[in-house]
Length: 362
Image 1 (cartoon, rainbow, N blue to C red):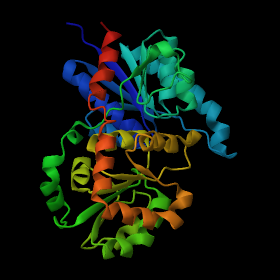
Image 2 (image 1 turned 135 degrees about the vertical axis):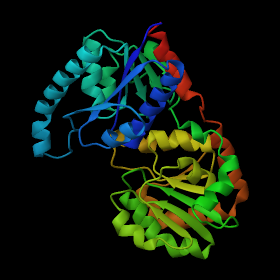
Image 3 (image 1 turned 30 degrees about the vertical axis):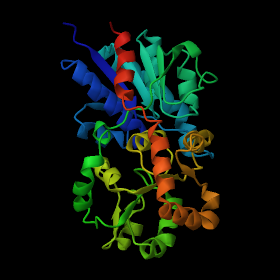
């Protein structure tokens, strides 16, 4: 029996790392004897998260371009050249059957080196509006697994496969975990629970909003699980109390989703895909500080299907408290949003992506 080898690259944020780990886990189920290697960017969170998931990782000296003139930008050509050279060495030594990229700084040079060496490559594009790296890589890629329709304007049409985004399998059925989740966080089973998600690093504007609205939430008998992110935990941990759980990072996403009645979230691609599976009422507050404003486009795709509420950061001061209170009081609206977002879920996304990978090695 052939012993397959796979290299995966995804990093910078949890939104790139966790899909790569989910794909690796599914490949491992199908090919228990396979060898896996991850490639990430040095000093980024994948260098911790991937080994925690049980996989080996090598780091490249690569970083993204800053929006203003900095020393980092001046070093970018040197970093890119060094990363391409290192990627070629990794590929020559490991001899993968397929290389899979889920986004992040390191996937660019790695997939470029793999394509040049004639090794099949698969891109997993999570967003409704792809970044420049994946657009460039798509010309040589063998398959491009996407989560949104109408991406033919960015990628070669014959390579696109609509699969959805990989999500953690423990989110598929969370309904029977509510009691356990409420007990885990020491919350009141008779109160409505608001879950606030700002991403693994945190979202300054969302944290400012929650701080401002805290007494308002508590006066409406709402309890809160507030993920403020590791960059902001020291600023906001003082609000940890009986009905407010302030955390920097969430290990058990299944528990927080099971406990939640209403969710406030950024609109990163992985978060959006998870929220479709979870099927709870969501208020999206997209980050305006991302390439091509892709979070707003991700959220709009759900809003157009009447599956969520979208508030821009510029609307929070004037609109948020009105919108939130109206949603909290309207059980019918909550049920409608839940049903509509759940229709967009693709729970078999990971298996469908792996099926595309398998086609390239058999």
